[in-house]
Length: 286
Image (cartoon, rainbow, N blue to C red; front, side, top):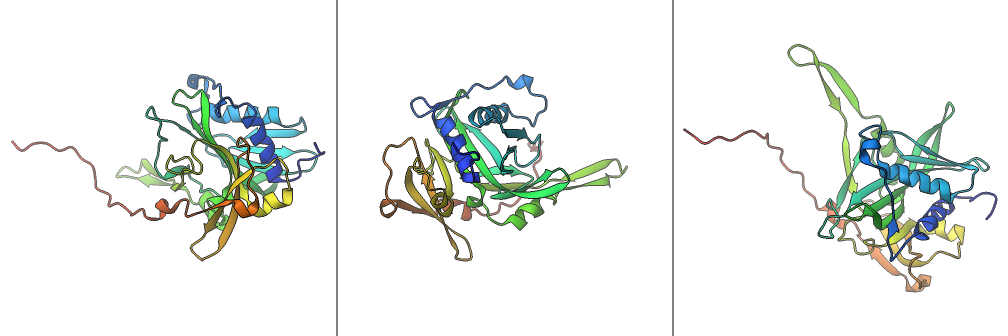
């Protein structure tokens, strides 16, 4: 291995390969600590498991920092030799007993919407770093990862300004109510596409990396196994190309033979706002 992994994608590929090397019958075993041992309700044993796995996969001169509850991204990885810093947001779902993935076409992004770039503090300096997302679908008993996606955050949203606005848009209003003793916490909840949805056949029950075509081309990594390319077209008509790397599959298609996928999250666009109705008890008439 070179002195430094060189790029965010190279680092992500190193993490990806360390995970799939552990796979048994296309599933990655996990051992999670008991929930009752977690210090806060926001802390997740899976995040801690992922942190330990990354530490084990990387050389000693890399540090892996858990950001803490309600902070994006969940994990920050830094190469102390090159200065490379990469964020990793961890999203976990547990498979239902019937084999389906929970949630629909979207998943919650608490307080901050996803993006391929994010902010961290290095000392007193604020630094913009690349950010990837690790989506994991666990078996019903939470002992195995049955589906995983390491995803460039720009695949979900490339608008960094929108991301920054979301980080600072929450606030609390005090002096509420007739006695002035209440408060309102204005905390936004964003719902963006859920790549773990079982209706997305290109992703479901696979272990893959999805990143920009141009980044894969620059890395020229001979171990990559591209099976599909995905075209993401925004509402302004711009098209962005991504490769899907599946290294548990033996065959690597040439660029001309790659299956091209479009409109992968199209169902998210047809959602309609629902009228909110105040819920209250209903009694029969006397």
